[in-house]
Length: 546
View 1: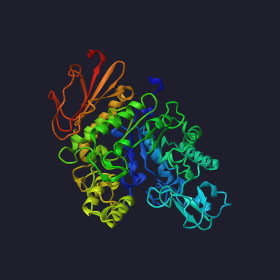
View 2: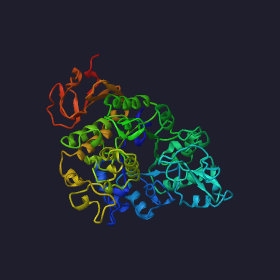
View 3: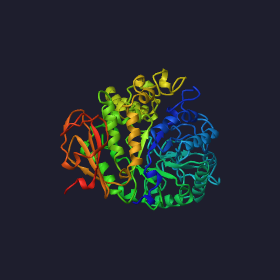
View 4: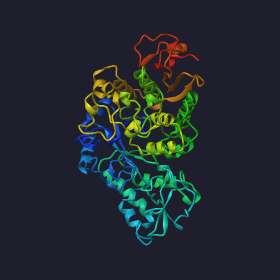
């Protein structure tokens, strides 16, 4: 891929903000758009190119904003449309694009379309949603909701059931109806006209659903719909589009992220994020199978080479903190957070940083009454009633609960971590007095400045965007090592995933290579990597003799 073909998002790094937990400007305990505007200089200092905002649309907040009642307004909890325009403009002044989170599989049941749809079968909006005839108490089929229970809800006024793959307050849109698609494309273009730089597409692999065949993900119309939407809306203004696709395989990702731009820029796939669990249940914990972890990440690197584009991430608003999950959030917190960043940012794809990841924020251990996440609280009730040991249940919550990622951003050591002058909607992690942005910015050796350096390397060294990936020492139980290679040069990425010294012997050609970045100061002892040590070495090709 020559420079002329390179898209801006291929050299970019994207920062995810969970607005509710980022910065509260008005003291009501909930983060807001003005709070984000206040912190844009901080985000600019990090060096990222775009901010992905979790949903800020008007919403009853049944599912933290993923239940939208008005796609073309901002929820008063976060501010106003004028605040949104100001955020887009202020970010643009700092050369940062704003990426919105689009939820197109379903709306809120309080959306005007659904309020009308429920009035009867002859209502013009009825066919905007997925309905099936039936009798009360006799479901159309066995489909289950992702949030427990059947995926069908009875509406007596219509004598029909509607489909909801998530909460009962999130009725599924009927993508088979061309009017629905037209309304959606019109709405997307309205946001593009306001200056939005792209979209993250929530559970987008579900829009081609075929409920009568029990097919939810990757129905046969999925890719035709994506092509149509791309043509109608996404090809303007050099937008970036990333699809959340839990069902994706490398083969389907070739379609989603085809370099011809016919569908999306890239997808989030989660295969590497479900390895430390038993079967399909995230709460049933298992130690990370490290060799498998390397194999899965490497598979996506190899199989999308030249055919598609990867999203690189270890954290988001639904996942635990990566330093607690894959590193060491105690003695080696700083070293292991830098090591994980090195491993991820050395790969081919677009890296995503989740708020606080650049500070090495950690998981929390709260009492059950201090948690807020509906999924976690339901799990607690369910497992306690089934006779599970409470300590075991809490251990699962400490490891995998979504509130780990949602505790307020840690700005400084003042009350409530400088997040709010009021009472935060969710408790702060008590370690904010030690781990916070103010401390990170005054300490040249902080995780923040390490991320800043990784981001600038991606911009200055084209091999990070273009180099072909190769895994080394696949069976090594301690080290994640790989190379990136172009015609002229080669990178070696070395990461020790253990809290102990491990042996690591380099082939001759690397010994006098240039160390681009490392999480320990040189000189580097020969033949070993120190606990959680990581480095990236660059070498011109002539330094190697086959």
